[in-house]
Every structure is written in structure tokens, then in C-alpha cells.
Length: 302
Image (tube, rainbow, N blue to C red; front, side, top):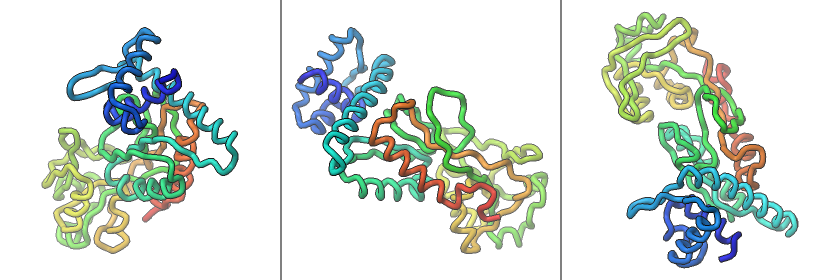
């Protein structure tokens, strides 16, 4: 392999975390991919991967280098496409992560539409309810619904999301409608727990309430289903309850006590020079997510 092919091999191994998978993507043998990485590491004088019998992970030097390689190869692909003219189709590999339920409802359909429009682009979609490290897990783009800490990442705002308290009409008729967060300790509570954490206090404009849950679930959809079934009150992102609210299966309570809507961003680590396929995905996702009613903050389901 020449040096450019070694760079493409390096990015492929970083994407797949496997020499065998990278070689299949590139159409070469696994030993050839292994030799290419060894030659690249010798040329650079640094180790790019930590290798074991079960995994292949980027080193700290590899994490820095892969960002430059993605940008360089993305610029090269874009230049070749421009030279080839308007008939050239965008091509490449992308990875995208989002919260699980939001991803199933809003991101996966957009990913399918994007791939239909750009058939030479491949995509990996990771839907999990945790903060994914873009560098550690080789993700190009993430949907984040929260206040963002200071970091070296680039964030593109696409909307804002309310966090609401909902319950079924039958439950509210039986237990009464809470008029203030101070009423919550007398109610049955459905709470979520993720990454082994217990229930955190419910926060409102006028303070926080530490509550004892009747039911704890590690899946947002299961929490909504429990609320529809009349188990108790659940606090959730507004998009999670929107359909049940529209159908009259759930009612929003304590709306006047909600915190301000949380910002929603598309986050990437590419800096100012975004590779062409990622730029296409970023623009595609931003335009369509900004049109989602659930991302319009307080104007939705008031």
C-alpha cells in the first residue's frame, strides 16, 4: 500500500475496531491491513492502536491522528468529487449516536432518508441512554439533549426540549392532580435509572423534590407505558409522552413549575473543516430536526 492507502486503512480500522472488518471494507487481506498499520506506526514513531486478542482500540496519539486523517481524506474526497463534476455521488462512512428513544422515534427515520438520498454513504447508528465519547467510541455526530459542558467539540443548536411530568387521567382522578411540586411526596412515582444510578431528585423552577419511587425502569418507553397504565406520575422529555398526550392517555401536570427547556444540539469533533459526508449529514439532520414540533420548547403541548 502507498501512504494514502495506509491512511485509509488506519481510518477503517479505527471505525470498525477490527483488522478483519477493515480489510473486508477495503478489499484487501487482514495481514495486508496489519502490515499497513505497522508501516504507518513505524513512519510516525508512535503506537496508534492498543491491540489485544479481543479488541483494537486507539491510543491517545491515535485518537488525535484519526481526526486529522478524517479531515484530510474528507477534503480529498470532496476535491475529487468537485473535479469529477456534479454527477459524482458523495461516498464514505459515518457514525451517529443519539438517546435511545429519541433515536428510534426521530433519528433513525432521518438516517434512512439520508441514506436513500446518498446511497454510496454507509452509516453506523448507536442509540443509547448515556453520554457517548465521540473520540473513544469513534462517533462522528451526536444528538445531545442537555446543557453542554465546555469541551473541544463543536455544537450546532437545533432546538429545545421540555421536561414534563405526566400521568394518566385515571390515576389523576384517583390520586388527585398535584398543584405544586410539594404535593409529589404523596403520589406514586415511576422513575428511570440508567448506568446503575438510583433515582435523582426531580428539579423544578422553585426547587427540587427527593422522591421514593413506586416503580423504577431502565427504559424510557417502559416508564411511559407504566404511566399510561395508571401506575403513577413519570417525568420525561416531552417527545417521549407526546403521542400519549395527543391520544388523551396522559396529561401534563405542573407545567407552570417546569425548568426552562433544555437545549438540543448536534455535536461533532471535526472542528471548522468538516469532511464533506459529515457536512451533508449535519446539514440534513439540522434542517429536519429544527422542523420537529417537540424541539420547539414551550410552544409544544402547552
